[in-house]
Amino acid sequence: MAGESNDALAATRVSEIKSRLTLPVIAAPMFLVSGPDLVIAACKAGVIGAFPTLNARPIEELERWFERIASELGAFTAGGGRPAPWAANLIVHGSNPRAGQDLEMTLRFRPEIVITALGTPAGVVEAVHAYGGLVFADVNSVFYAKKAAAAGADGLVLVSSGAGGHTGALTPFAFVPAVREFFSGPIVLGGGIANGRGVRAAEVLGADFAYLGTRFIATTESLAPAEYKQMLVESSEEDIILSAHFTGVPAHYLKPSIVKAGLDPGALGVRAEKKFDHREKTEETKAWRDIWAAGQGVRAIKRVQPAAELVRDLAAEYLAARSTP
Ligand SMILES: Cc1cc2nc3c(=O)[nH]c(=O)nc-3n(C[C@H](O)[C@H](O)[C@H](O)COP(=O)(O)O)c2cc1C
Image 1 (cartoon, rainbow, N blue to C red):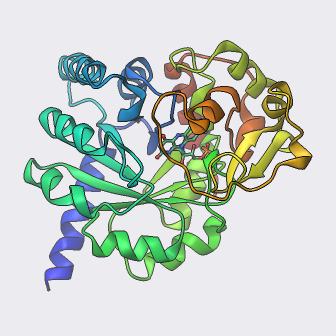
Image 2 (image 1 turned 30 degrees about the horizontal axis):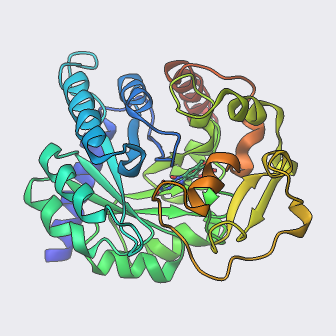
């Protein structure tokens, strides 16, 4: 019985959120890429905007980002209704020295959704629920999906194979049905989804939302350098390489950026120690600053465009896919 009422609650939350969206998409949070301009533009265009809190540094900057997002979106009404929700992404891995401070600041600004990554959501669920927020946990295996669901996550972000940055290894065709066996809450599917038809396909598989990262790097509002955006325009899936060299965990990068940094993409080793420490000037920060991540859907990027235009294009493709039998 309790399960049934939870299911009904989850379904109501999902449809309430979807009713505020142009299409069921989260502009995925990306280190050194997503900032307030992208979050605000994405939400105004009708998709869920998200950013890693670590992108704002020092911590005082995070307060300014939160203030700006909350005030611009608070004052904005999409077609007379509430705008799309925005999400803060917390890196809950033990090596993140700002985890505690960022959570505290997040709780002050109460984003509708908190997306946890690189660890268990257990430490944030209660506090986010206390103000009425939802916790979505980013997971890359069925094992971690089970753990996150047991820890009380409201939604699961399934990062499948082909994703930009740290990727999963499972095909979404196996991942979504495996998780649906034990989880009836909102599922977000990510990994190489780069057009509106892919968003529709995620729904057909049983997901509620699609998680698009790479496609949003090439927007005018993203914090990525112009050269990175141009490299995305010029790249295809053949330019994407999987490597655990930089962080100790398999991630997808743009091969040309590795060459540009003076390294041989064919001769990369595996980093022995996992490293998610985002403090300034660590090897990892350098990796994300100079070695650029992207997913297998990169071919879909034909130009750099404003986020609103990208969302319009995705929505047109999505609607066309929905009306095709
Ligand atoms: C440049 C880049 C940086 C990323 N940084 C983060 C991050 O800080 N936190 C996080 O949870 N996921 C991060 N991701 C993963 C994305 O949130 C998302 O899972 C992924 O982009 C989805 O796959 P796609 O790029 O093929 O669309 C990053 C991805 C990229 C491409």
